Image (cartoon, rainbow, N blue to C red):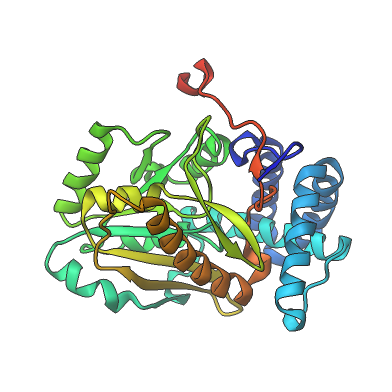
Length: 324
């Protein structure tokens, strides 16, 4: 399924919003969170008015939430969209606070961390499939504070270049465990295998299709509609032959939560009926993603037409390899 008006997530320009957040972070550092929020809403209004594709995607998502859970307290209208983008602004502030050393990490509750304990104790690594729900930066910092849990986060940094540059200005350590991966080459797979062999955990997103002209996807039901999900995490898991876990996060009134869940001891893809295997894995992942999304719907930050394939996926360009 494709949508003519749907951009690939990697084609969405983030620079203007990040620039606004840099100013708002300065306000927070001087005056605190409530003055930050007072200034945040005019920025959000401007962003919602000038970004029709993101606005439409948010509204579509909120309608799906309301259909899936009428008691969620979600308004599928302009007010709901404003709340959704305001939550996004709060999340970016939290990320900046994390790397600026201003977030109270003692208020981060880790649920299911014991599932990884045996692997960590034996210096065995694994694959963590994450999502764009909540704040992944919390897990990166938690891992940096632990002598026994090391993460390598696979990213497409061209899309997040402006934001990653801003985080690096707050803390040079913010880029130390990122690995740029646009395509999974044999050399990359070998490097990741070596890292897991050293007891590290590799983190890959399971809810955004790859940056490719012909992305490999599998469709699964998400909030009552079939949506495309990448099969790359499962291909990578089959190559690495390691335990696979899911990781979700969400902001709470008291701080934040990180949830770890066991997914598979290992993944072996059959030569025949491989697509059916992908469908089963994707369906299981989508079901857990839906569970956590319904718990914190306004912390779902995929502002594009999630349920359709983009009409044209971005092709690699010379600019992709030039320094920012």
